[in-house]
Length: 451
Ligand SMILES: Nc1ncnc2c1ncn2[C@@H]1O[C@H](COP(=O)(O)OP(=O)(O)OP(=O)(O)O)[C@@H](O)[C@H]1O
Image (cartoon, rainbow, N blue to C red; front, side, top):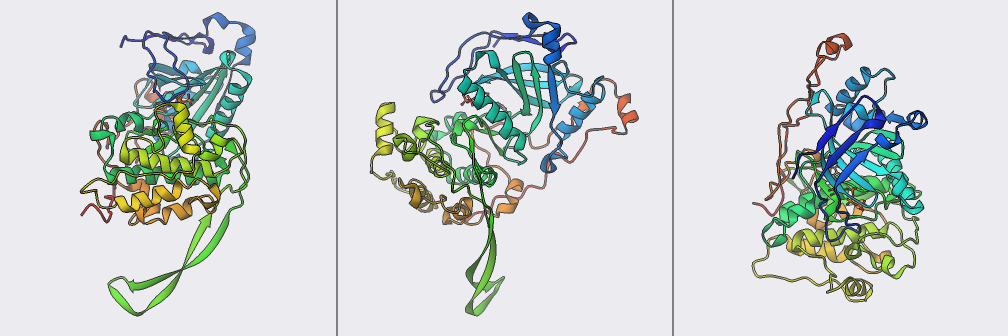
């Protein structure tokens, strides 16, 4: 790969980045763009365009407030005359890839080592009205998110014909590429369960906000540097109402710690259910191997498409292929729409836990969404399936991610440090970014099958 040429004069409109890198395209992405990259504002340099430039730093979110990236941004903007983040504060390092809506770059804050971000750059001039609305949906949804398995939007910078979204950078790559590096393109059951569990928690959060994701696939599951997942790509989402409820349910227990009860006792459990069950859309979007039957037939769909896709996703992690894949796109769609149930290849000496995995997949891949697991009560029901037995859901963020082939992990994150103007820190009373970002308090992922 050629080294990119970087040029950063002191105005937003003069950011340019040129590289002869070609895009990494996946066979399942709808757009394959191969070009040399130029992100240049020079031709638009005018007073009017400069006046149109706007940037907004998103307020710190409670869950990620101790993330040192926020402090780095705050420090950069403290030095800015108008207190805003501008493109001139960023240094583009590398092109990460291109999607339907724009290009994504690895960037960092000038003068600060270690604070890497991904910058999604959307060129509004190149978008059709439909794509423009998808881009706005994505920005709106990113703005609403505050979850460890979803991206944090640090800033939105609108300048000239570009909208730039500054989000978390995931150096671990995407699950699709990592899956292709595994023997037989399959993850071990423990690894698949870990990734599926984290994706499930992210989906649960999106659904609680009334957001139907519609684009779950391994390509959109990125890995953060600590090996935990981050769902990406929200342009196909749609939003709906959701009526959260808090329910009590009885659960029979026979043991209390190491003591057995003489008679089984009933224990009450509280559960939170927030599923957009009334969500409804007619637009057919998604990736064909992941489309639910109701999407293929075009009769309208709702939250169930995500639970279907979750079943396809788990199947792909465990089997290295999708369950209804045919020899062409049309035959895949025919297989999905047909009444035939999912089939499994049961191999000799199958890993313990595969029976539960197959049962969960079969329940998620029920063709009628009214009978599909998850559609009525969302993640609450999916989490309770025997496949996930042993997972302590509230602690999942602290589990040690599986170390799979081809995955680059950095457990102890180096501190973000300021290269220049260190004296500013003293004046600002924020001498260092050092924080407890690196959580070394990993719990080992204990499950029934690994012993
Ligand atoms: N936060 C990130 N960290 C690292 N790489 C990223 C990040 N976001 C996106 N990428 C990479 O950049 C590329 C383009 O991403 P983008 O989200 O624009 O499009 P996409 O995932 O290909 O999907 P679509 O075309 O449906 O929008 C992808 O290859 C993705 O892996």
